[in-house]
Image 1 (cartoon, one colour):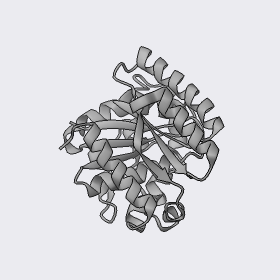
Image 2: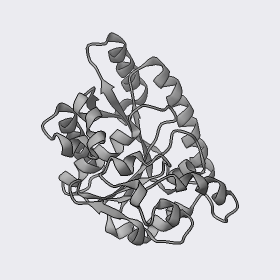
Image 3: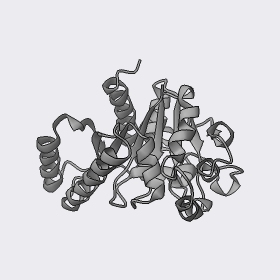
Image 4: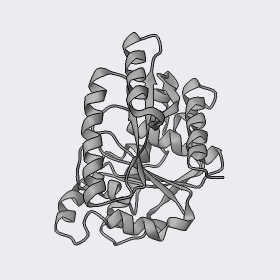
Length: 256
């Protein structure tokens, strides 16, 4: 049975897509079957997995409107080792169309249930806004992985996200919880980052993942080559950190 996680943070620019594609590649490297669901109309997770969003015949848009199954709409780039349910600009229109439909916030959950036995992990890349698309992701998921920078404003964004998760948990998805906080773009030389990191550990305890993702040029360069950093430069510190993070996820969830 697949473990389904949203990679979410209501603050933009914190590395959600970078986390999604690199965790997916890391999990694939340690022997897990992985599906990435791109719920962002910008399609960055699609492009960052080496798939041209402009050439998608079927996408997550078709799955949400129930005109295609995940098995029909998924694509794969063998270089990265995982499947992708891609997104493109069409998805922006789904926001408006979903409002009129029945079960509008549970469409993705229904589709994923049909593909449950095909994967060990499903990672959902959510847009930064709390939209109908994000709601579909949160209603489908067992938990949320929150990538965050150790900066002052990141703590404010985190409290907003925690409130959102509580509301979805209470009203739509009683399984939803925060799986963990992932410290990304971390620079140990900056005192403030160390202080915020300690605050996080003091407040959230073991909800803070042990793995820390350092600020790394190779991770930033990788998307322009259409690859996750883990595949683009496996020897880089950022790539090695994400593979270690994948191992930590598998350990935490007791998956063999």
